[in-house]
Image (tube, rainbow, N blue to C red; front, side):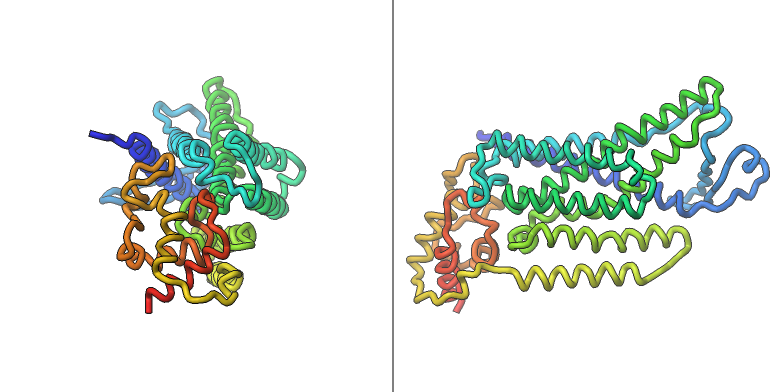
Length: 398
C-alpha cells in the first residue's frame, strides 16, 4: 500500500483552512452587521448602565437580545467569550499550506525563470519579506497621522498593496504572486487580531477587574482595525480562488487586473455595511458590477499568446502529441516523472491521442491562450510551441 502523504497533508490543511476561514469571516461579518444594526436601548436602566445599542433577533427558534456598551459593563461578567482562535487557525493553516505548496515546490508554483532566475531559498525569502513587510507598512500607516483619516488611509493602503502586487508579479509566476498578495493581506488581518484587537480587549478586561474605568481609546482602535479587516476580506477571498482562473494571473497586466478587482469589491462591501444601517444605496453594487465587467473586458482584450496571431503552417496530430509528451506529460501522465507528483493532477493524463483530444479545450486554455501550464514553465515550452500546439488542437477539433 502506497500513501501519498503530501497529498493527504495538503487536503487536511486546505480543509482546515476553509473551515476556520468560514468561522472567522462569518464571525467578522456578523459583528459588523450587529454593530451597524444596533438601535438605542429602550430600557432606561440599560441607558444608565452604559448600553449604547441593542438588537432583537430571532434565529433557530430562539429570540436573542445582544447589547453593546459604550466602553464596558460596570462589572466583569462571569463568562466572556473571546473571538480569536478562528483567526489564528485560519492563518496557521493557510501559512502551512503556503509552505507546503509554494515554498517546498517553489520551482513549480512560485519561480518563473523568464522573470527572475531564483533559487528556492531566494524565492522563499522574498515571499516572506513581502508577507511580513506588508504588516510593518500597514501598522506604521495606522499609527501615523494618516491613520486618523480612514478615507485617506484606505487610498494609501490600497496603493501600497497595488505596488506590492506590481513587484510580486514581476518576480514570481502570476499564480505565486497572487497568492502572496493574499497572504500579505491575510497576515495583516490576523496581526490586527493578535497585536491590537485582542490585546486592547484584554486591557479593558484588566481595568474592569482592577475596578478602574477602561480607556475608550482602546475600543476605538480595536474597532478601527476590525473595520479594516472587514474591507480586506473580499480581496483575500478573491485571491484564494484565483489560482483556478488563469485569465486573471496569466495576462500581461495581471497586477492591474488584481488591483482593479479588489477595488471593485470595495463598493460591494460598502453596500452591505450601509444596508445594515438602513441606508440602501444600489449605486454601490452597480458600481462594483460595472467594475468587474470593465476588468473582464480589459483582461480579455490583453489576453492570449501573441504568437498565435502569426501564420503557423499545418500542424499534424503527431506533432501535437510530441509537444504534449515533451512539455506536459511530465505531470499529466499515468506515471509522472516530475518531482512531487505521484499521480496525474486531477487524474488528467495526456498519454494517448484520445486523451489529448478529450482535454483539448483545457490544454488550449491553460497552455495556449494562457501560460499557466506547464507549472512554472518547468519544461520550457516556447511561444512557438504554444502557437503550434494551438493550431494543432484547433485542427483536431474540426
